[in-house]
Length: 158
Image (cartoon, rainbow, N blue to C red; front, side):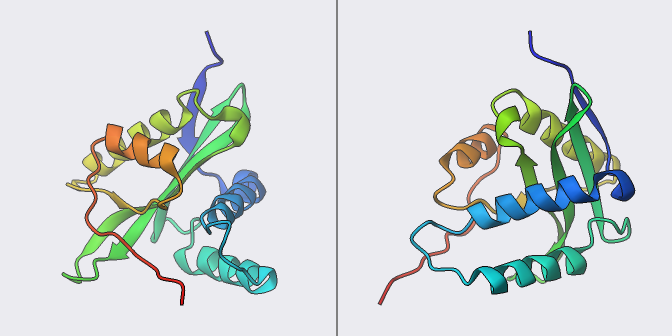
């Protein structure tokens, strides 16, 4: 049997460096390998996103951290996203990230279960998220959890 997974509230003082590093890695991995990226601009944009969506501000976001054997294993970060079509503010999972060494051990399921429980306690009736087309493992996880595709983003190289 594997090590126990503990889910707790995010503590900015304790978790900031681990959170930002894992979030950056996930954000960077979201760009398909064949897409050129200006790394300096990308890092600057990531810093802006973290500042703007403020995982450390409980008025803007809720973050839960997973630990395995007392070590940071991953996190789930939820905030509000304006629906493009309805302009409704929907609860949105900005990031559900698990360290590579902790994947396929139930950490993502535990994190999602916690954020879903929290959302229900807040009286929320839906959760949204975005998953990249090349991230098939995450797509399968979210389908297993009951998510349905609502939009598909397409690009064409000219």
